[in-house]
Length: 155
Image (cartoon, rainbow, N blue to C red; front, side):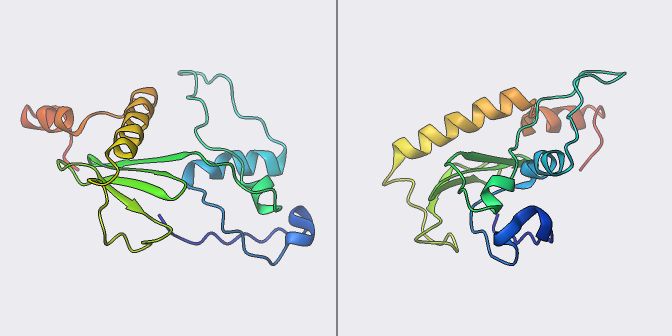
């Protein structure tokens, strides 16, 4: 969750070209950024089905120095999950419990502080569940059940 993203666009970044933006962004922000930079529109319909709404937001304002408003960033892979909002990040390695880290004070995520801040864990876990439902995340238990019946390809 802390990978650099290098962008070369002197004409689009103006006096911010050559600077470092430390605002947190994530993969779903890439498409809205490209759409804004190119002036292209996101499709509203496709021949087979309507596309899902974009989850991310353009990075351009942030890259130009406007800052990034605090928001949740969501992740899921093979039942493992995470949410980051501001200084807080909850992570869950399937099938374990949520852990909470202060990524500003503990960027290596060495000290789980979930027991000290249970309301923060509940709040972020609730946000993750709402995101997962909205985006159609299939619970890992369901995938494992389908695999047992030979109805899903193994990972």
